[in-house]
Length: 431
Image 1 (cartoon, rainbow, N blue to C red):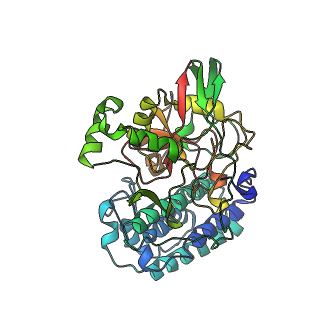
Image 2: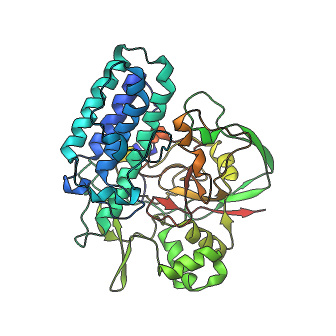
Image 3: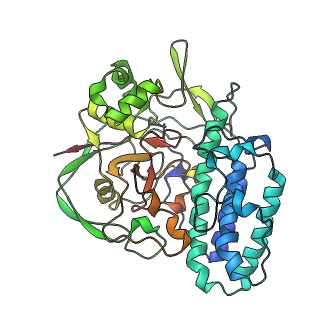
């Protein structure tokens, strides 16, 4: 299967005025909600996920709390209760409603949340169109990028919620977004790209937005290595399953082996066995497992075990960044409207393929601060820094990531047992 032409174009720059960018991102979030009913927006399927309604409210709360209440004299918050309900984890701002119970409250209604959104948008647009927001410009940019992160979370959390419905409903069906099908292509054989040893500059050092965890720029010595030319496919991973990979402790880290047995993992999340055939739940509904698509919704533990079984390893985040800096940012992102990872094509000239888009790639690197790292001042300093423990770094973005949001230095992070995100595997080897 090949990406349609729209998905292979270079990402459109995140251009225009701050007002243009604010409106574009807010409108994109609203478009993601168009296929949904109010009932779709209120369910929380597990503690790690949040209802769509909460994401809509929380991203709005961010602009109200960190910008409007400070920038506009006499601004009246939409509801005093929302400061508690929709604060995620900012202890400096105040207490928060428990994350695991976000789906347990029926009010405010979905309609009230969208009224809240319109109220805040009205004041934000007034500020950006004619007010003095210069001292808040960095916070507004952070809020825009923050909302793009939640656009992906809306889709991943929604997918998990829909997957537990025995009717296997689709968020969108082929044709809903103008893409009837993913055209077939010649599959790409696995090859290896070699990299010589080098002292590599790591981190964001150019103009434009970056999160604090992408800084400061520092140097890392990288030994010679090679990267697989594409992501690991369902077909590849099936061999691991059929050869007893989930029953062989020698491939697993100790904690991973415990989790595999406690949770009885025997295949990736969203795989379903029907008679002799494998099916896979997607945002397009339940469909036959495509052997050539990248294997997705894999935990770090599974990715690491597969790599050991394959006689390889996961790349470090620094190796990944060294390779990615040499390539244009092209791939299957949210804007392609496919909402599934697709197979690498033998016609793709850029190697390694799929470094950007399709799936977030687990690396072997723990999520830690860079040398000299300093959290941002104020409450937003809690955005990244306090999570630098017991998590692993992922790189590259996914089919649910907005294309203007990603860059070679972007560091995503999740705990090693997480599987509900669009995560996959790229092999690496030392030379």
